Length: 207
Image (cartoon, rainbow, N blue to C red):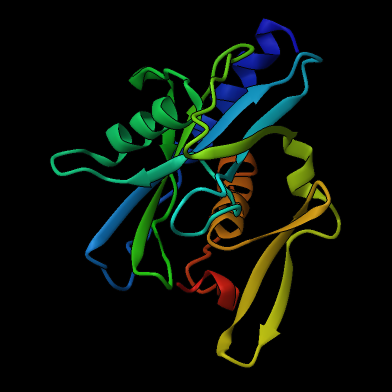
């Protein structure tokens, strides 16, 4: 991807997010977190997003697929927390000027209100993984979010809401990550004001 195409992709996402009217969550849990949806491109110039696998050493949600992120510290804004977590988890320093916008907050079964921040990760980002938090990092083509078999919705006896999941690589990515990535696809990439708060998580992610 040349510089002009890179600029168009960034401007396209920023313009879509500027026109996206966020909807507040229907409840505000005491625990708040922020995650980052990072846009970049690989060495072949293919537009990509970043996804990580949580360390098996973590006390909760170990080994699950996730976006860089974590708890919002006292006094931090959502954007400050998301960028700090990106630095701490994957060693990438993103300036405020590269933040493109925000998506809807997503309330999880474990009591968190997750605030997704969309940001430009720069040209050929150099990642340094924190092994205490991140086991793997992958840059996946944005086109993978538009697969014909994605998203998938399944029913579970424990809830009357559909569980959302995305097939990526050789895995199924579940909510909350799947919900955030689906809205990222719809709102940031395609300019469609799609809501995801009503999508359920699988039971294993409720704790």
